[in-house]
Image 1 (tube, rainbow over the protein chains, first blue to last red):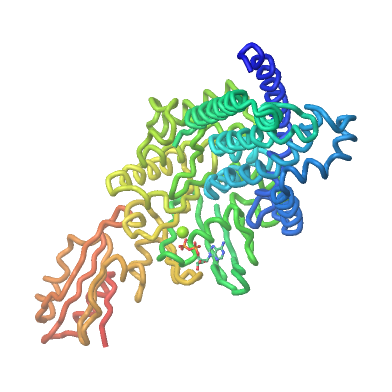
Image 2 (image 1 turned 30 degrees about the horizontal axis):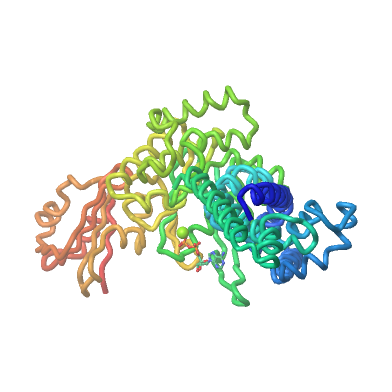
Length: 218
Length: 320
Ligand SMILES: Nc1ncnc2c1ncn2[C@@H]1O[C@H](COP(=O)(O)OP(=O)(O)O)[C@@H](O)[C@H]1O
Ligand SMILES: [Mg+2]
């Protein structure tokens, strides 16, 4: 395959990967962040302790994390149809990607928030701060560099999950590598695709690290 | 100003009951610095955290500035807490906020407007001597400076009471002195009532007017410092003047505020006794000097000599 033949394929696939990753990152944060906060709040000694709620949330998160992504992708097809209206294509892949990454991200959020000292939270309580003020002005800002680090890991995981989206017609770089590189023995294209993926992951990690470092005030 | 009565706190720790407070009464008067002294695990932090209800007591009542906090609902309690300052051993500052941001936090909680907030923050930083550090982050400050930020933050709501949980325990001796001096100053200038807990005698010695000695969740003795020292069998005095256990027949004389009167030589002259000194210590407490002398009195009119010393207002304790 010549470069002129590969180029449009690569651009299209990169665009599809970007689309899947950007949208699923957005929904992962919208779903995972509140879930992570809820895990911390309902924990023993938390701001709104509730053992039953905490256990149920923990179970949901663990189930989400233990399902292999490929199984999850097939299993949520009915849900995808309900939300997106179709079960194949790039947008259809956003649903399983989000459901796969949100529990993972929620755990990372939980870990990051746990790093905020009890001392700090209690100092805020002693000043008369309510629950929502503490979440918004103490927990999240104090944990922000850990949250960014968690988000970076999640985006990288999403890039790798998205490589499987070819199964439901989502396209993307992973799909390209499989269809051309593996099935049609276009080794060059496969190598180039892999290089593009590596570069993207490196880029995400570097930017994420830099932002996290900038936010650290310790 | 702070009234605590019948305070009990029982923790349930993996099925085991830990009695952190076993029935504590405490009365802190308006404008005084009240110290709670005790070893680690005595229940001091639990007591302090029960005063602003960070910890819900198992039984008992707490009133601050005439309001019974234990009777308040959550919203009222939050409002009451805004008028009770608290400072912490490890400062508990927000690392993601600047010094000014940290001091502004309680003002934000109280919904103080932006302009008024900026004015108050500047005023408070000036008060604690950190006017030049408004834009610094806590990580860039020394321990003493961090505690000054903590103090400025605690004063933001114009509190009537300041609670201090081992505020100087993480600081070196020189810095400790400067923080204690600042607290004493705030107490004098603003009439701020301070309840502080500490395991360090020198903190009590340095700035407290009254003290409670705490052990195993109970207050063993409490009162004005000079008054406590003059009380027979006082634990405070025993800790303040660390003399070895008295030998049989020895006499321990404790005095406050009269270190320069020649009582011993008077006794020797008037009652013809021999005095040998076994040990002694002199301390400056609550602004007066206090001391304890362990002596052996022999010969002459020994009993009359001891009566004379008691008559001069000294505490005389004779070891059996
Ligand atoms: N949250 C808690 N759960 C169980 N036990 C506790 C808790 N907090 C304090 N305690 C226990 O209560 C006792 C008093 O603790 P504390 O008030 O911290 O003492 P101090 O401040 O004098 O060192 C200790 O035996 C401690 O182990
Ligand atoms: Mg303590």
